Length: 310
Image (tube, rainbow, N blue to C red):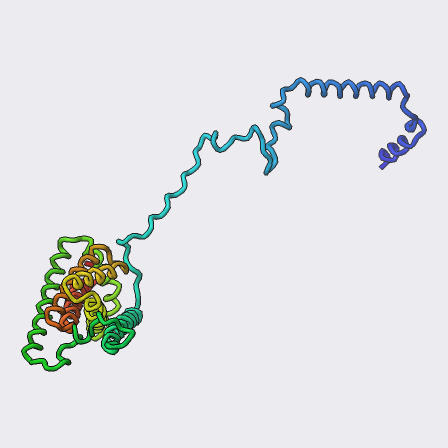
């Protein structure tokens, strides 16, 4: 405590508060000025790149000549991933429900059957009217949908027509199996289409009825339109049969079905048309078409009972 008091008194004494001489202050200022000049000269002598300011990185967002460009970088930038290929004909079709399959079957059957029946009945009721040209025949009598409903129709004729329909269905079924073995494109299209339509119908209490429905309803509607209306509209001869088959085949492109499937449908359509014209009965083509559809569907379900693959 005494020492601290002595120091305090000494600092407050008049001697301690005596001002520094002016000459001493001038000498100190001269020394400081010399030091500043030496520092400035040393900074001017240093190279520009070694200055602290040059070593600092440029602020974000500013362009700098010393920054390396992407092209001159030693590590190349990663290449962008290649674009995904578009889905082709080999891609499987999306899965659908049983209700969607049946709704599509009913809807397609309705509009094709309605269009064919309306066109046929128009030529029947329009005969002799100003709206119907004289060159247009009555399609209902030129090529009946069901000849058994147009008497006289002998039982032998009905049996013969039934035999022709069964023979056509058997020929189509055998030819289909042969084409499946030799044409990968046709086999792939058949698998895609059947997998989408038939897989939802393989289970359930209504499976058997659903299979009959999707086999025969479209057959009746398609034969009514393409054979019962289009063939008479084109004159009813061999050219009309072939033209009707080609139109039928062209409409079978899409929905997983390719050009090979369309060609097959065109040939089968010509066979159905020839059967209808030769017997004078569109019902022959309807029955043959439905039986062939059922045989194809049942065979596919049996061969793909476990996993749905061929």
